[in-house]
Length: 319
Image 1 (cartoon, rainbow, N blue to C red):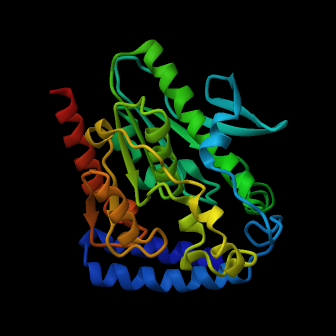
Image 2: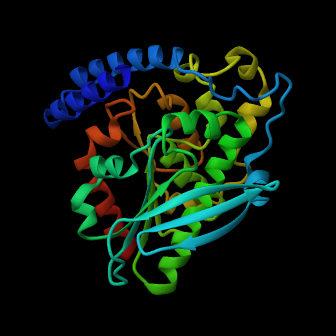
């Protein structure tokens, strides 16, 4: 019932966003946030409940490096089997339209916990992009049902890292496929968790032509140990004081050339992925930030502006 109420309010929010009154939009989102916190408080099992109290989180870079990926393809769906320490986990790639090498391609990734990635893509990009781009949607490990997500994706921090690693490697497989068939540009994007995945791919591979991380920055530990997830985590206080969680997704070296191809888009009222920390990360590393006066729903609320911004940047890189 709570989830249904959140979806109804979110739909109302997107509807009134046609008129773009930030005060109203942000008020409604704050109500949704309170309902979300209540829902997380009564959600079991808790995130990272399998981690022992003395757990030391591994650097994500090491998990990514030591993950071996094998790709199985069909015409409409790929399965990327990623293996880390003898554990094999599936990440899916959904092919939304027939591939046309004369068109640019776009990779999209949904937010954390979402079980409907095509719906999420349509809210932000929709037919406007489906008609003009080859669309690849990455569906993260164990995001088919809420129960699966809680018991196989966020049951431990390592599994959460493996989920991100699988998605990052899926981006790379899509890009290699596109490069083998086309000279057209390829865009890497995603919202929230998907924005994190696209930014991680930029930092560790950087092989797409242009990136648009939406309402995101790459410090997963800091985000999930933030106040927005306080009621969701097992032993939030203990994990919050464990620096290995907070430092596990640290980006050690950022190539300056990435500032010419990664364009983060944020919401200045975002509380889930806190705007101040997000902006500070991107800004201090030389990236141009596009910010809208909304919260974490910025991707849906400002979708028309985001689409226009992406087209403008594509024109720039083609000149």
